[in-house]
Length: 78
Image (cartoon, rainbow, N blue to C red):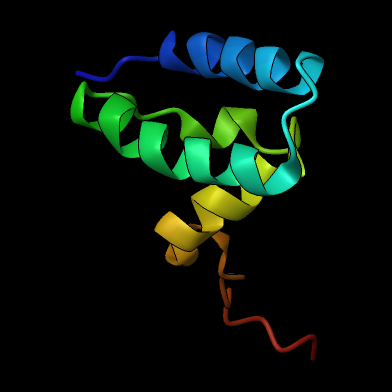
């Protein structure tokens, strides 16, 4: 069973880091450290925070590049 409210927690982290003026690079490093910790506690709604901070998006994409790959639906448009 997942931890859906983890996205609310992460959103608060994202907001706090941005409000404190933490640099992009520092935010990305923080996200790369905290995302796996939260995932180890069953957080499974990470994608809900995509778009809130480009540094978060970059960190998540580095940790899970396959989540960002475009899916080929087999429709070639013909």
